[in-house]
Length: 529
Image: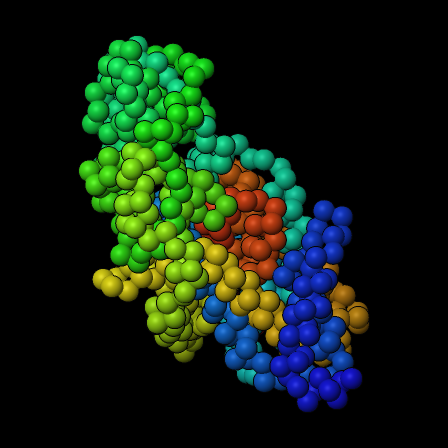
């Protein structure tokens, strides 16, 4: 059997991925390993023969680049939008990484682990492959950092998964971190107007050009027996009836400002004004704001919701559209055909990934990763195939398009590519680390490294959770931040299985890139002190 695996590395890789996926689906109490199952199966198979893990460096890099680039694309807009809000979280995480390195140095002097093994332990507990490479270079090519890394790596994954599972299920107040993007539970009600005002004067309205805030929209308007679509500048009269759509609390405030709620729902009358969801498949619309589409002027209609992935979003005037968005448009029934043609409305078209823009984006990310940054004392670091594509992905995800080049990828395709890259990366890491793990893991030194890594990491992650609470972050962002602090892609996948909230990916992206850079610098200090 081993001979067959040695003869076909491709067979070995995908068998590891398949068995790892099976392991990842098995529940261990409240915990599932998910994609991390590929790592553990890889460690087991890699331990059978040291040659099973050779030559997989390029596979690791490809898988990791695909994963972090697609995470960056999906998180770019929210990352920069929330950057000011997340600044205290980022600064606190950097300080905790410095504390972690200081504790690692102290543990080495107390337990006499050895500075090179300790550096590998730090890189492994924080699951940072670029940090392992930096530690190996600082150790003059010694294999000891890889040994410490192999032992601490699964410990880091398991400890972090346990902690994020606890964090995700313990709600934080999140006073400074409201959920502005995931507006599940939008409601609509019909209101009888008793206090005349313009639509754009309603409290919380999301139809003001130049503004990316707002929690309600007004769609149907019934006046003198006729039904139409309310325009943003429409003056509502006493006796009018309108449909208000939005976040429940905001809908209640808007209703109180306008008049009183009535039982009859105008939405049920679709004889003149109707509504439908349309798929945004025309690339020319990607990156355009809702206001720029001029739907009220073009079609006497209004966009009232945007379905992105599994989330219903309330569109503000400055929200930009992405390929694959499903927009709910209220418009005169006879004009729905024109609206469909305008958006493209093609399932097939959104499955056709533009590999030119994707390949160019990843190439730019890899190129950025090759840039070496001097840090004095003859030391220099490169961001590598993890941080480089992530940073470029964040920037391009924020830009969404450059002239005719559309950077964004439909959400479904993004998630598929992301998962593929993640599983390939983890399987390759496990196969490459299996033999070193087996040789040292069950010795006294291995036990000391594992216990030290577990205690240090658990303490630091609990401090990060405490800091998230102090700075007013939500549970979703705190869990994502913990995943980004450790830097293991599988943990983000685990967080997303627990918390269906875009703030988790934003928290991950905020700490992942800066975390890699800080880890690369600190681990070199640990290796020589």
